[in-house]
Length: 68
Image (cartoon, rainbow, N blue to C red; front, side, top):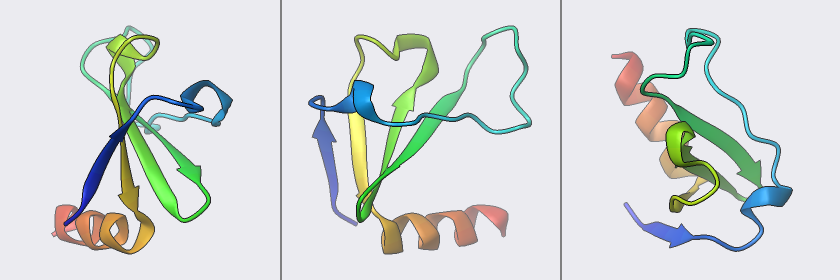
């Protein structure tokens, strides 16, 4: 799997969290789609933390595996 850490243009993306996430904060990740990649970041450090960019095919494989 190839994962690239990026920070540029992260504010321009439309980020969303799982509907299973509560509104009280806590441990959660946010995802956004950017052209042919999926971007992932920690919602607790959304403004200052790193953003990982993962190819969409690799993200789909991860989600399939996680659903088990």
